[in-house]
Amino acid sequence: MVDARKQEEKTEPTVYSAAIWWRDCDPFLQVVGIDAAEVEKTALDAMNDAVEEAYEDSEPEDERTADDYAEDICWSGVCTFALEALHLSESESAEVLAGEIVYPELP
Image (cartoon, rainbow, N blue to C red):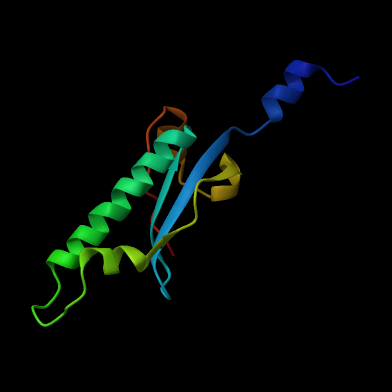
């Protein structure tokens, strides 16, 4: 019979991740943390910031509204992973395990 403590030690911590991208583009931001609700809030805030920035930086002749930009931004939702599956650096992994939100560099 497997010792429950040994089995628990072998289990990777569960972490949560969300990716954000503009329609028809690769993701430009990944949010990773140990609390699903915090990852979701952080990702949605980042999406709103990106929409606002895109709208404010648009050319005067661009007639799109902020809502138009909001329709062009996408996200993965919050996905569950084993920490090891995300291939974070040691420092990023430590930050996540300490309860921090990290933004890993995307390839």
